[in-house]
Structure formats: C-alpha cells, structure tokens
Length: 323
Image (cartoon, rainbow, N blue to C red; front, top):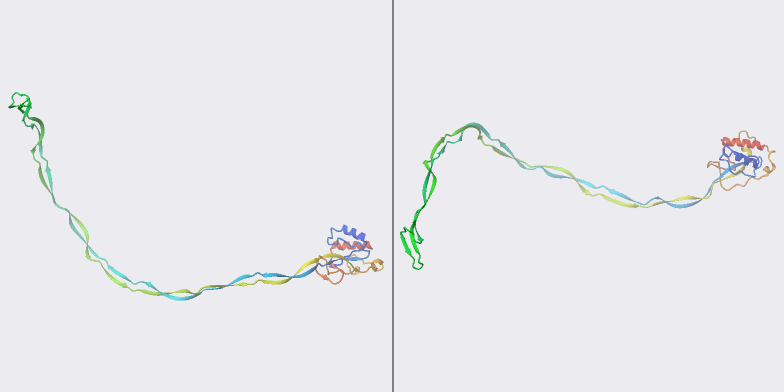
C-alpha cells in the first residue's frame, strides 16, 4: 500500500530519530531539512536526471560481397559400344584309344667273348750285349794280329781283338698262348600294355558374331558460373543522450492530512504553529517528480511510496513526540 512519508517534530528530534533508525530504514533521506517545524510534513521526491539529445550516424550493416551461383547444365547423350567382339569358337572331338597287350624284346641276343689268358714261364739266360771287335792300341801288345809303326811320331800301334760283353737276364716265356672263347646269350622279352589310337582328335570352327549395345552419358552443356556483387554499407541516424544533470532527491513540504499511517493522529489546525501556517510552499524545482524507487511520474508535489513497517512505526513515534 502506498503511503506518504511523514516527518514531524522539531529539527533536533528528527535528527536524533534518523540516527537511531538508520540501520532499519536505509531508504530514509540522509539529510532531512534542519528548518522543519512541529506539525510540518515532508516527503522525499526524486528529481529525474536531465539529458541533452544529439544525433549520430551508426553502421547497421557492413559492406559485404554477395555471390550468385549458377549450377552447370548437363545434357544426355547415347553412345554405342561393342558389348561382345567377334570371335571363333572351336568344338573339339577328343581322340579315341584302345588298350592292347604286346610282347616286346627288352634285351636282344648277343655273343660275349671270353679271353683265356696265356700260360707263361720264367727262364734265366746269359746274353751278349756287345760282340768282340778289333781295335788299335798304342804300344806293343803280345799276340797282336797286326803291328804298325808311325815313322813321324815313333809310336807303335797293335791291332788286337777286344772281348765281347755278356749279361745274365731273366725273361718270361709263353708256354701256352692266350685263347678267345665265344659265349652266346639269348634274347629277353616282356609283356606291356599300351593305348593304341583308334580315332584321331578333330575340331570344328564356329564363328561368333559381334554384339553392340548403347549406354547413356551426361555431358556438360553449360559450365557452372559465379556472379558476385557488392552490397553497400547501411547506416542509420540514432538519437543519443548525454547526461547533463544527475538524478537527485529533495525534501518537499506536503499536506499532513493526506497521510494515512496506523496510529497517527494528524494535529488540528489550532495546534499548527503560526510559523508553519504562514510559511509559503517551496518553489517548484526544475524537473519531474517520480515515486520513490520507481519511474512512475507524479503530477503534483505530493510524494507517495510503499512504506515499510519500520518506517510506519517510526512515523507514529515521531508524531506522538510532536504532540
């Protein structure tokens, strides 16, 4: 509930009461009017701050580049291709075999010669290795068959017979010569099984024709393209405000009869001092008046606000002291 703030009593009583209840009512004005008289009621009003308006250009959108993309355009075509090339197929007939049993010669007949060695015997003989011969010897030799005198040298040469030389040898003589004997070996045979070709293999050529087919493809009829254009910067004129005077609070004299507080009895007109009756209302201050703690504007000099319980009790006690 909205209530008017009441301040009654003398300046001394108001200052002492404000100091005593400063912790319970922080919203109470820190500097109450010192010239307040008994029976007067004051309200603290909010004087709105004052601003100076000015215009300013601000950028609402930066310049940027926009792209328009055109997709490529494709066209379908049909292409022919060889799905199977021409060729030749061969039909082969396998050969036919027949199994037969035959007797074959594994070793032919042949004659083997066996040599019977000769029979030898060992004999010892004396053989002449050099026959006797006639030689000339210097000097006189008795029994010489011929003598010759050299008149120039005075030497005598005699022709004598020199005996032959003999040696005893052991030799191997053949008692019975070697002989060759023939040994005949008969032929050998074995039984084998083999496959005999009855009918030869043959093949037949069968030509294979060429096959063709078609397939669809896509070709680029028109390539993709990119078109760009610049979007210009966008600006806007805005009104800005600069603070000229800050917000402030002031005490205003109000009519005590408009105050409705529990336990408060407003004084009669005879109890109001002549000074308070004759005091003129304070001159209106420049600016607007708002409810305390809000942005609600009031049209007159009266001030109303939500009064806490601590403020209500304080106002009651203050009124009783003033009576």
